[in-house]
Image 1 (cartoon, rainbow, N blue to C red):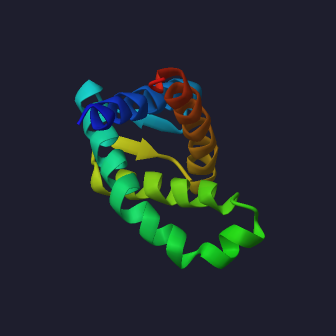
Image 2 (cartoon, helix red, strand yellow; image 1 turned 90 degrees about the horizontal axis):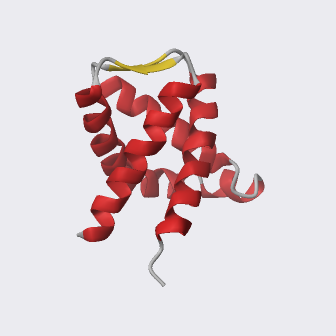
Image 3 (spheres, helix red, strand yellow; image 1 turned 90 degrees about the vertical axis):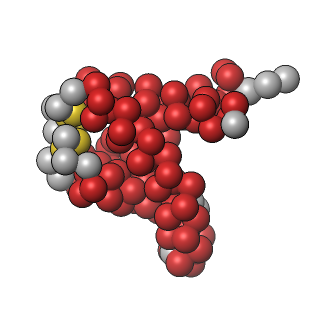
Length: 114
């Protein structure tokens, strides 16, 4: 349970940073950010593994870089389902997925229990 809450806060922090970095991504209010973090976490938990399995040959050929495209698709799905979260295009979603991945890796490593 503790890991789930930590991952929620990491997603929320990463989404907040992306909102501040890119003008093509924005939230109407803080509630939209919280809801997006929850939905993004759920999509990462349930949809992302399925997409990774279906795209395994492409992912292997690209040495794992196709995972960034999968993350962008997850962001676009969150944009589709949440009315107060906006992404202006797929290119912005790819750039945001790179930033979210880097922030998630850094924060997960900082908060890892020893």
